[in-house]
Image (cartoon, rainbow, N blue to C red; front, top):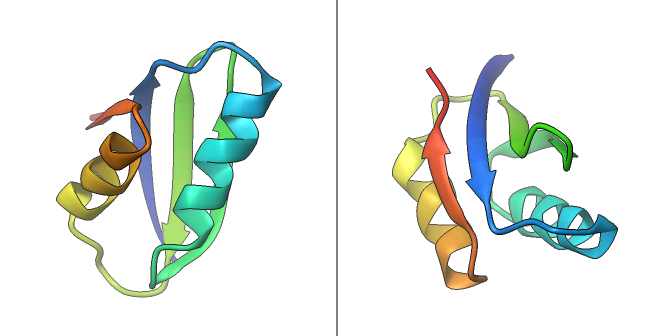
Length: 70
């Protein structure tokens, strides 16, 4: 598994966490997604390499600003 961590801005409640989790799990190649409100992070696991831009774009379409956490 390949793990990537993203900072996600714009989350303010549990509903946001659910929305971000749903978006991430719908992306082809994402096997698992864990999102936390307290530290505004999303951690995804994939079986194959997945470009960070795919995640950033998908979340951006839903109104969240994401960036790869290095």
